[in-house]
Image (cartoon, rainbow, N blue to C red; front, side, top):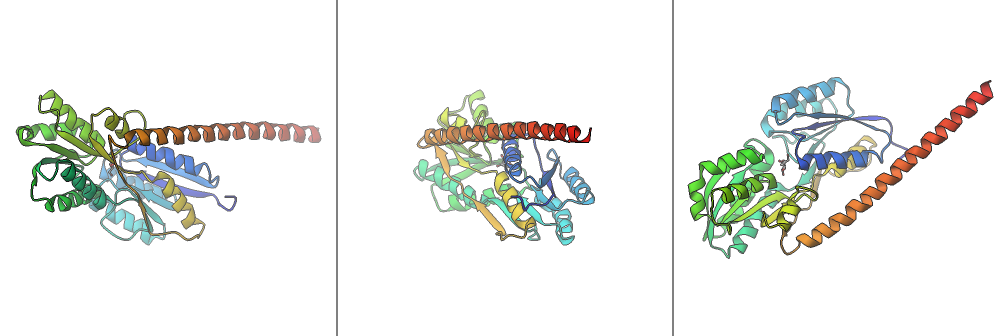
Length: 326
Ligand code: FRU
């Protein structure tokens, strides 16, 4: 990648503190390390759309060459993203969207399809008969809207399946728990809970346990993250019955960014694949992940070694130059 010039990449993250977005940032940094010409300006809005708007404005003042953004809520972030785009700054929207199609590229999975997949999975595992609760994400963020639509469209096709309760959990475990507690009596008639992400699903499981509802109530989430505290582990331990893989797209966003900056070809829509993880395939997925992460560790060791060798070399050059001068 010697052709890469020095580019400043602005990365505006809606909330940086959860495992999913830490994984995204790790992927971003890993891929960036393969493009020596890239410098990252990172801002975390901590779940606040107003803060995120300010952070994007600051990035525009700081003369970024490209903007990567995961908008906290679609509507509030739309105009600042359009502003960037209209100024000629390429914009890559990742995971969450704005309400506009003024962006250069999108990277992420299809949240409508994931919602449908969850609905179909639950309907068939309940053999077409049962009552569900849906715990949704943050009301204004695009995956909430799309997952909800997909899920409800799938359920409509099963006359024996009914959604008997809904709550917002704003993507957060505590809010999911308090939302579910408010409608707790419906848990008496509930066969399964679908939460828009795994952290809210784990909150739902804990509410079911603490309030002594039927442990056979199925709980399904989204993300299926590998590693400690991730969804794969929760499916393996039985805390969750299933989870849909939701790839972060961190790597793909950086690849797309350099394609755009270097005027190579790229697609506007970069749709990442999802898949249902349940007890039938979770062990296989964990094995695959262990293999990938050990390869990743090897790559990082090689990079550290290269850096060390370069430092030794640079020092030797310095010594040589000093010797020549004196
Ligand atoms: C992480 C997260 C994920 C979810 C995604 C939706 O911040 O809440 O759990 O899948 O955002 O944008």
